[in-house]
Length: 273
Ligand code: AMP
Image (tube, rainbow, N blue to C red):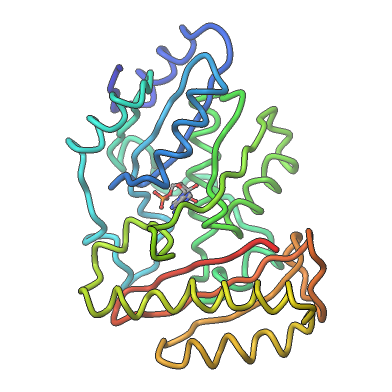
């Protein structure tokens, strides 16, 4: 595995790779969720590039940018063992210039849900992923359904900017008790971790309601809010796969999403119905 820090080195190495290239962008502190994306990429491509970059432009002032977990040595080992070919770990000043060209997330879908509670977050995500796509020129790029709205907006950017990249959505990896894996789970105390289980519990309950014939978005959301009573919610929302509001769940075209704070840790989770 080659570890590189500058865009110039990455470009040169990437251009030397024959065949198909899979790309997995991450912010590091790698866990089994990330690893599932990496494994899929290694399976499906001749070569795999992983990036680890805690991207400052996708954090809002007051968010956890400076305390976001950084585990560079452990992450390197994980990538090496997973047969990653290139690991890209740039510094922020290698990725950004002063007063540069800015990408804006679309007004509607980029500023609802996550985008409403973290305004500008998706501008930063799309800005950095755009740069990373140009540097890695992947055949396929791997994104987790855990960040469902991000996945949707990346797919939209690929369409809008005519990128020739296949976006591969990957299932959410959970701990055996249901908690969706997240680099931010390390912030949780044992008690908070117990409370955090309410998120997946509410989603599971919603899925059960649908299974037993309850399709009303309003009634499902009301039940979820009951279960989530002890969590300071940002939102509980049920949308179609284009992130349009709906009144009734349509099996095969629905995402149920939840976001909220457990202590001072903000967690998100969702389920695709
Ligand atoms: P992050 O490092 O949090 O920016 O995540 C990098 C990629 O891993 C994103 O595409 C995430 O959606 C994905 N990811 C994070 N957590 C999980 C998980 N529990 N299951 C599947 N994918 C995940």
